[in-house]
Amino acid sequence: MPTQTKPLGPASYFPSIEKKYGQPIEYWFTVVKNHNSLKHMEIVNLLKSEHGMGHGHANAIVGYCLAKF
Image 1 (cartoon, rainbow, N blue to C red):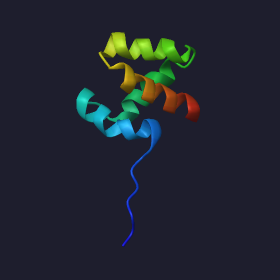
Image 2: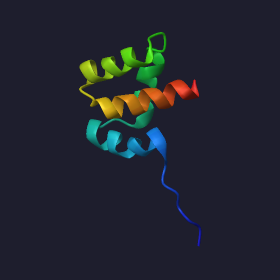
Image 3: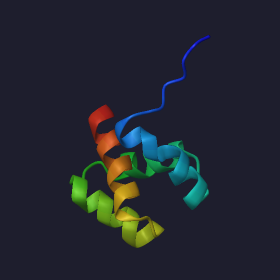
């Protein structure tokens, strides 16, 4: 029987982010990509102020995205 592994790190927040904010995680990746000229905390603050996202969720998305692009 294959074992199912849970995502670790920032990706572990993705299911709850999708549920709480009503958008697929790819939507939030696009928001970050559209602001990738900003610094990490500037994007976190943008997600918090313009999208009502909590700090932990915003930080997880930004950290994940900036590590990938």
